[in-house]
Image: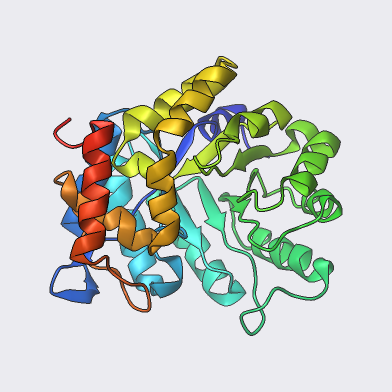
Length: 304
């Protein structure tokens, strides 16, 4: 249903853009700061931006905010990068947003999984029914489901029946079902994995068949993350291990603190827009920011 060129565009480093709020009002967007961050990263080679994804505080945003952020991202970097807005796991809102995203020029959207009272549906068929219903209402917009629910390989096979699904974003909490699905389905989907630099296991996931990965650090260290992907393309597994080791301590700090709060503090330290997080997320303390700053200096990122 979708051309090979779009599939190829999805094979890269997916930058999960940070949602930037006004410094004195976390309920008001700072669209200028948001756009400036995207332009900075695009100028350094980042070619895929996910807007309002998990790292972008997806659960805290209104539908109107999602649309205006997608619109601003398209205006800022849409001519040189693939902009992927996010659909919430709510069929009513997602079905309303899909044609609006398409009208802005988006070609693919990250589609969050459905929830019932904040829990995954008990019946796996319910997940498939959700994406089938969303696909029938998404027009020409391709879908990239986000597996936050630990789907089985059998469920992936059922999702393959939904022609609007072009790719799968998997956080790799449990690699085995994902790897079994890749073995069964091959290139039916573009397989987009996750990584944690500590431990450095991303090379194993590429060996098993993923073709891209998502990243938060690419917002402030694009050269390192893009080099990591280049090493994967060249199957230079020792270099991938080396690069992941460089960022391992910073990854441990990210796991210790609020994810978005840590990334926003880091952005501010290197001179980009960061600002506050939206509660219930928590901003970093001065002591925590100092620890991040020390690590950025060690890595040579500050002042680069």
